[in-house]
Image 1 (tube, rainbow, N blue to C red):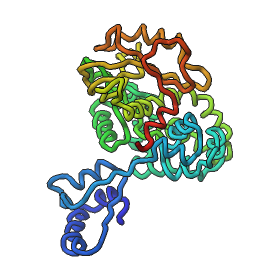
Image 2 (cartoon, rainbow, N blue to C red; image 1 turned 120 degrees about the vertical axis):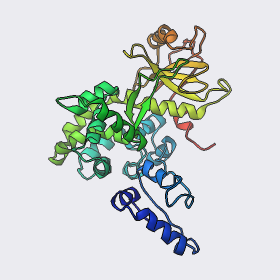
Image 3 (cartoon, one colour; image 1 turned 180 degrees about the vertical axis):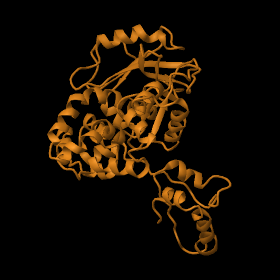
Image 4 (cartoon, rainbow, N blue to C red; image 1 turned 90 degrees about the horizontal axis):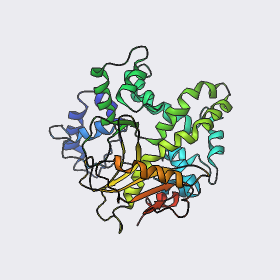
Length: 362
């Protein structure tokens, strides 16, 4: 097993040729299983591309993080608690293992911020330091997106400090970070093309949480003031979670599709305009990024005690026709952490149990 292969490739230009020679001449005819391991997906995929020395000599296997059903099984939480745990840990096995079965979110966070060596704190720092030194533009861009900036101009202003990063600097940085699967870029999903309103987010839920709450809290935690770090998390948790849970909801619902109600739904996204007014949480369609047909439009309400109610429904009805491809009779749906008020004419609604069920083996 050879770990940190992307680093080897960058440090030694002859590594790939040497690996090919050793494999072809010595190892391929022997009972040897050679594992090449690396977290930089773009580099690992490039190793097998046409024209590279190791092309055609390996099979690719992507090791995904634990999914919400796995996290629920390990933490023994209810579905809503398992979704919270997924957003905090990202399914990172080492961090999930440190979550004692049955421990609530607040207790887990309290224990983690009380220990400067806790996996929740250390894993993010180590993973970023290896690829993105603190003084680099890439790190500044990640921190800007992690702090909540989503548009190109806002990221440029935040990452540039006194002066916004020039487009010629930021554009290739964003492209590289997307290639490395660190950043994700979302486009509005509708029947009308729209490439100008791209929104960026941290792709990994754990890293998103770490950048939002833990990176700046490290000095506090190291001097024994984890209580202040915890206060900051609790103060912003509900707002942060409301945004962070949306990609997980869309991915989970897509795993439930197509179904009997929407047999042709192959894409689930959101829709927004330049002003984010309105901003639609859920759009189901037959394809992306430009749909032939919009199948449903929906809203997410992910609060502890407030169900999806008449106010949210009326707002959804009001904003429905802003989505290109939607019609007055387009079905309306909702996703809520604690249920839906009775009497609302929704075509479907889902809760935490449905999201976790989407990841269970069938």
